[in-house]
Amino acid sequence: QVQLVESGGGLVQAGGSLRLSCAASGIIFSIYDTAWYRQAPGKQRELVAAITRAGRTNYADSVKGRFTISRDNAKRAVYLQMNSLKAEDTAVYYCRAERPVDGIGHWGQGTQVTVSS
View 1 (cartoon, rainbow, N blue to C red):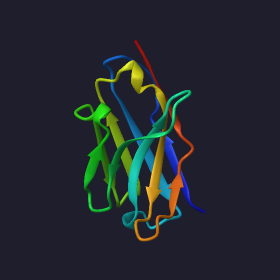
View 2 (view 1 turned 180 degrees about the horizontal axis):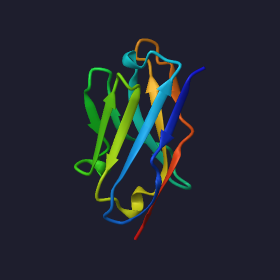
View 3 (view 1 turned 30 degrees about the vertical axis):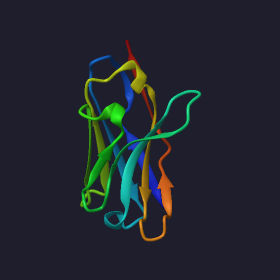
View 4 (view 1 turned 120 degrees about the vertical axis):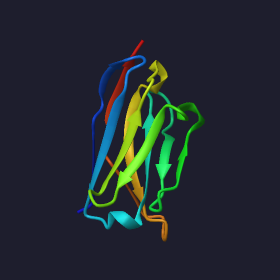
């Protein structure tokens, strides 16, 4: 059974930091590309940051310079370090793992991040 379990969300003041973690099980993690998405109330889910199985990263313009995505294949985990948080970063953050060879992907259940201004 495939599971992606996010943790690390919470309430933080603007300007603060949080580190999200996503632990994977039930998949050969090292062959999956991974990413963090977020969905704010009334808005569509959007890509925040992605990291390929080879370690190549890309970021949404809105988070460049503030967020850092990383992964540890040995621990089957992907992380999102979020600094200089803004109220507009408030959303549910989701972890995704996708197998590039066929596009099969899996979502986590999400973790709430709330930034107070």
